[in-house]
Figure 1 (tube, helix red, strand yellow):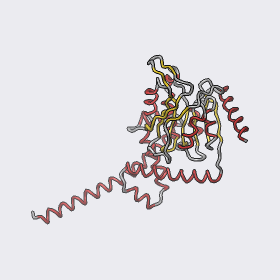
Figure 2 (cartoon, rainbow, N blue to C red):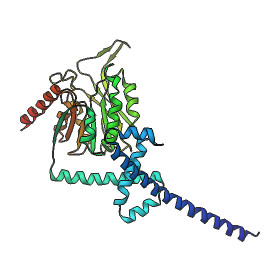
Figure 3 (cartoon, rainbow, N blue to C red):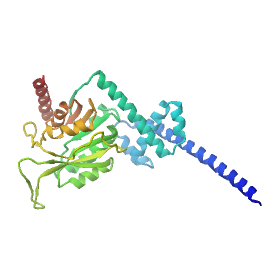
Figure 4 (spheres, helix red, strand yellow):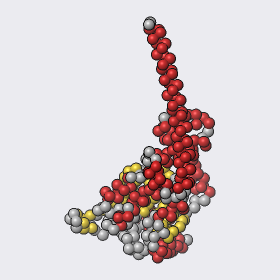
Length: 325
């Protein structure tokens, strides 16, 4: 067989393999869209609060991949024909990334329009468990989750950090951040519980005021408290540089026994959320986080398990509004 014949045969094989690869890639996108539609049906059937467990028990992939499929199924039909054609030529991973970019661009435009029309601030504090927020919030609608969960020995037994991260994965916008106060003793445990659902972003810190805290079990004089920062994938760079360590305002026991000072997180809210953005606090306590949302003009939604504490937090915000007026 001469060289020309060999090359001709190779060319035929190459082109045949290319056509099969191209067909396989396009079929993969179509199948991924179908998976997303079926997952959306399953979520509607499961109801709020049960879907994540259903995915873990019944699907051969995790919740993050499930949300990628669902986003693709929702977004692909809305794309212009030229964009859909371009996506059809991508790998599945690149398609997921493209869908994330498209959805992020859509949200930015919606936020700009909303901010231009209303500049609305304000919010509500609901009495009850954080699970109520599954029904109160649309998926992919929250700009930041910022909260102070219970991190005593007794408090961490019920896995509040894992539940918090699972809620954040469902409700945060892609790239949105979840910030959670934590104690030094339980930092690793709480970090690991959140990392099951979210991507690791950073560790912020707040300096204690009024001297050191004595950690007798380790004989350490502690002068800072950590704030775990996790992100809903994909990781997105903040638009501005952010300082990861602030001087604290001290515990604010006027409104709650374990209350934090509102001013110590105000800058992070301002730097890491858009104007008019929504901040959610599932462990509200005396209302420090909603109060911190007021100065930079952010909306808030919070839950607090104790009715009396909810009343204190609401009055705090009402009084602050009257003073500002």
